[in-house]
Length: 237
Image (cartoon, rainbow, N blue to C red; front, side):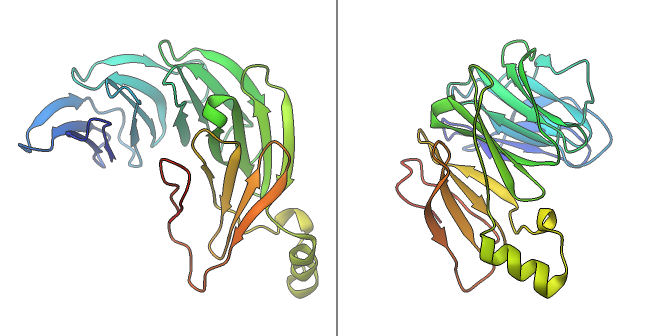
C-alpha cells in the first residue's frame, strides 16, 4: 500500500493481484487496477506527481497506471516478467526494475516502460536511487554494493557492509566463506544526497556512495525491523 502525494488518496493491493485507489475522506474507491495474475505479492508505489502508480512483484511485469482512471499506461516487455524490485526516480521520468532471478537491473522510461540502460548485476537483493537520480546503488546477497552513474552506466564505486574484523570472526567462528558473510538486507536512499544506508537486523551503516567512506554506523540494542529516512534527510527512524 502507499499514500499518494496529495495525502487524500491511498492505493492498496489485494492477494488476488488487483489494486484499488481509495479516497481517504469518504472511503470510496476512485479507481480499480485490474488483476495482473493469481500470485500474491503485488506491490504499488506512487509517482511524485500523484497522477500515476507503479505496480510490480508477484510474478508480474512492472506496470505504470493512471491513478485516477485505473488504465495501464505501459508495462515492461521482452524479458522475465517477475520484477521483484522497482523504484521510481525522484523526477518521475524513469523507473528502475530488477529481479532476483535475473542478473541485471534496468532503468526504464516511465512513459513507455522501454529500457534506457541495463546494468549487469548478479544476486540482486535491493536497489536505491541516489543524489536526485544521478546515481543508482544495488545490493547483492553477499553484502556488496555497486554504484553507477545513471546517465552513462559508468561504475562509480563498490563497497561491502562487512568490516575486515567481522569477516574474520565469521570465517573463524562459523566456518563461513567470506563471500557469504553479510547482515545486509536492504538499501535506503538519503533524498538528494549521495548517502546510502545498508540495513541489516543488527546494525545499519551509512556510506557516501561516491567516495565509499563510512559516514555513520548505528548499532541499537534491539533487532532492526524497519528503517526510514526523513524527507529532509536530517533524521532517521
